[in-house]
Length: 300
Picture 1: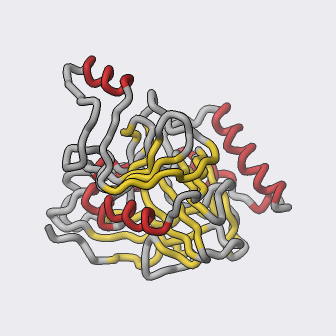
Picture 2: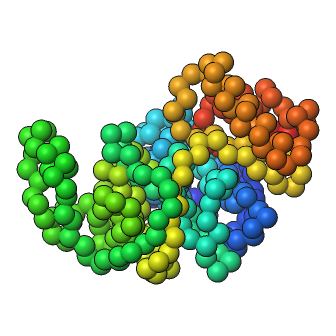
């Protein structure tokens, strides 16, 4: 399939630019990485295809292009590629950080930052938050689904064996790394890459095959893993303040939700000794209402 390569605006925003959309030189003072670009879709493209091409998850590209048909964008349609990321306020500067709301992970190691989209646990099988570490690495793993998962399959009229051997029907893919949280959670590949960037797993963290290969090679046993859930992130770059809001957990801009957002912004301003009057609060409200995952400038 032909993939669109026409970049319409090379940089709508660019931060710490890299030739790669996923690998960067890490600077502890820099909290924003990547760029937002636009491409022209060709008639064969789907948003799912473009997400894979630009190493984005399903939700990332859908949220950035809410008015575009995900299966038939149409020849010449401009597609925003949201490859700019604000690091969460809590992250490991030597290890793996997963931000559930962003459907995105980060590995920082030896002065390098690598970022990748992730699939996470469903609403009823939440990926647990907190700090852990990798305690087991497996190539061509078998899957031993717990009884609760087998029971769920049974309720749907399906039979799930107690052991799923390696192969094309194994949801762990070809590589898996266990994290030492009770319950048997893994960071792993997948046999269904279209599910990366969605709430789709039973709590594990799934990656594209090419991303788990790189992460597997760079993450020895003992690598720390931090899972956070930060839908609202702020950062400063070139004396300007930027806001990024993910996730549809805020369905409507109620007064209560706006108060929550305002408190998050004010907390950031206070910690960084920034005057409230330097912020365009109408822009803050607009970004929060859209929840597109696109970084926007909120300072004047």
